[in-house]
Structure formats: C-alpha cells, structure tokens
Image 1 (tube, rainbow, N blue to C red):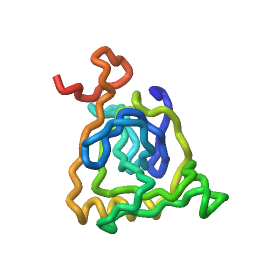
Image 2 (cartoon, one colour):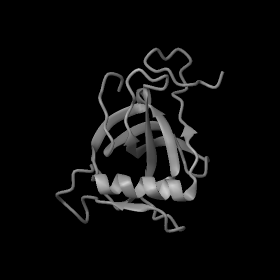
Image 3 (spheres, helix red, strand yellow):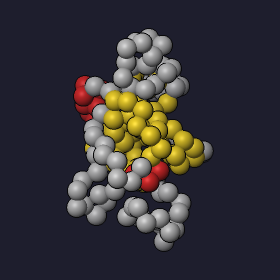
Length: 141
C-alpha cells in the first residue's frame, strides 16, 4: 500500500510474512509497533510483530481483542489472536494488503516490553520483486 499512512497500533494484513519457525511464507496479520520514518533509509518499512490465532505455548503472546469475545473491537480480528513479541519484523509497505483496524496503546507497550525482555531480533520481510519501485528495502542482492 505505497502512499498509505500507518501508525503504531495499526493492525495490518500483509503478504509474504514468514511463519515464526521460518517454515511458511503467507499473508498474515501484523501489529505495527513503529510506523515508517520520513526520510529514513528504511522509510518505507514498518516495524511490526506477527499475529497468530494459535496461543503461543511459551506464554509470551499478548492476547488481542477479537470480534468473538469483544464484538465492538476495532482490531479487525475475527477470532482469538495473539501478538508474538519474538516475531519481530520489518515489513515493507509494498507487501501491505490492507489496514484491518487498530489495537490499544497498552497492547503495543506490552508487546514492546516483552520483545525487549526476550531480546527479540528483527527479521526483514522482502517483497520478492527485484523491480519494485515503491520501496527501498534490502532485496538480498
């Protein structure tokens, strides 16, 4: 979604997101922790964490509101979901399909705190298009 604006707390649906175990790349929801920075070299990326519908077995996931439990929620999530602090990603805006909704600041703070506590390392997501003109992320070449 080049040209779109994103903010911390946004819940986005993005393509090409790797699974936590690096096994499968597919479209997934992510929670934005840091929006793109204007003028930065990586200014076309958001820092986000992956969201899963499977409760993390290590207990580090942050439960996000979903429509099954909270019909009035604005997250855009329609089933129980957890933000996974160790699933820290830089996501180029060119792989964002849509903005689903938003979470509360308290959710982002909880995820950030756990990510720091876990020493989570950021993994880069790439669009896979060598001719992509809408982003400036590292294409591994």
